[in-house]
Image (cartoon, rainbow, N blue to C red):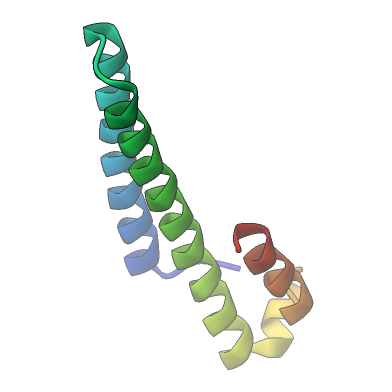
Length: 89
């Protein structure tokens, strides 16, 4: 299943921001910052990763609904995409 370019670009932007958050966490550790501040940043990065995953799965679900036969032929029947969603939930 080919993802729409808009989805790919959105996920790339999200991943770029997440990489910045992770680099920030590493700097915080190097600087000896407070544990609660570090955990807050890790939590934000985790949520951002989840959102990137949900964006991909939402695109997959949309494709499956609009083109069920093609999705199944590509190896993405609705059940497979539902399992992908449940892994993120």
